[in-house]
Image 1 (cartoon, rainbow, N blue to C red):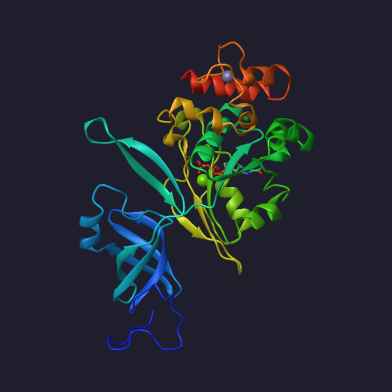
Image 2 (cartoon, helix red, strand yellow):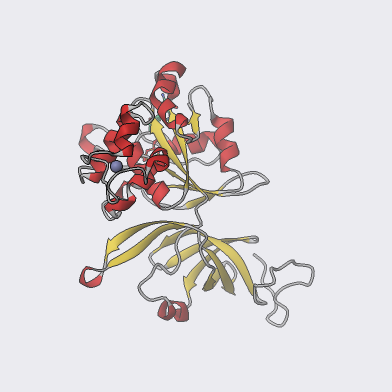
Length: 325
Ligand SMILES: Nc1nc2c(ncn2[C@@H]2O[C@H](COP(=O)(O)OP(=O)(O)OP(=O)(O)O)[C@@H](O)[C@H]2O)c(=O)[nH]1
Ligand SMILES: [Mg+2]
Ligand SMILES: [Zn+2]
């Protein structure tokens, strides 16, 4: 990065957003670790620390996380300070226990446009309960969910579609993909262009393999499916944003799973709304506070019995509602 004189830090011909103060530039936080922030700017990556003023102003919150759009000033070539964090359009967050029983919000990724939920058709076996839990998290955070059915080569098209058809039926986009055959990779590439996507799913489903395949040269580490010795341990450990190649830009977070977000803090009465196919029936129950588990004259249970709602999805709902996860 070139150094510029203090008197005239930005050349006249350089377009700057009107909201950006002179000498500052905008960027996106790619990675945050131990008080250091890697910020992608138009002129390259700048390693930043937070201005002390920001720390005092926003005490106790996640001041800057990956995905945040920030304004920085350069203190040396390639080194800067985060001066301001722009308002977040959306976020993937978990509620962590805070002081005196209060909840503290723990933002994992800011400005998320969509979540790609990667679930393998086999190896590891498809777990619809877990997919339903992830979908609840997305619905509750009001984030668009895209399901990627990975490793289709292991079971074949027909079996793969049988597993995921219930989700297509209720309106979730499903991409059938395999890095072995190349199936679905153009669709994944198209989905990622120009957006900030969180790619998640349990260890070994092929998240890093998929990203490597859609963006050659990425070279993310991939691993063999966990042995019983290190069951569930992720090969990918640090969450960071990867710029998407191509004219549209975009970012991808290859996250080591959002399972830890949990949904136990979700108010139980909000759960039914998070199963999107139940929404048309909510409000049709006899009891105002119907849990749709045991009450008479329940519109949701009637819909299940009439075949309008998948019994498997309803089973997931009941388990979550009863706190059985
Ligand atoms: N047959 C088949 N195997 C695949 C496919 N995609 C990935 N794999 C294999 O699955 C294993 C796990 O892949 P990874 O990409 O490391 O999985 P991950 O989801 O990134 O796992 P973590 O980083 O641990 O969360 C590797 O051995 C891959 O070669 C696929 O489409 N078909
Ligand atoms: Mg990985
Ligand atoms: Zn009901």
